[in-house]
Image 1 (cartoon, rainbow, N blue to C red):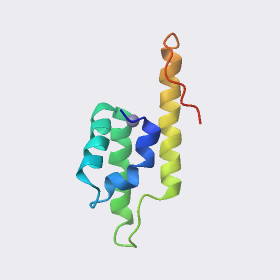
Image 2: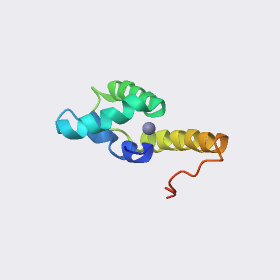
Image 3: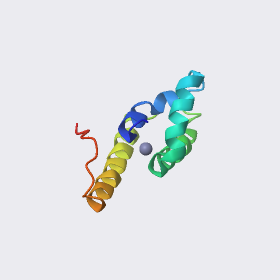
Length: 92
Ligand SMILES: [Zn+2]
């Protein structure tokens, strides 16, 4: 299972129509299980549609880092709520 951080790093690939099907399935399984990333994908798709027609480009770095920060805040809040369980330490 991917972490949200890993997923966001693959987000450009996920939205790339030429992604290989195996990778896409892998990423889709994360989106299906993770409401945070579902929202991220949804928002990003809509944002890219706005950018489309201006110039071909992938997810803007600025947007990506803002989404990543938002997701990390949510994860941190969730971790605080279930402080008793030891998760894998994936600190950057
Ligand atoms: Zn996620």
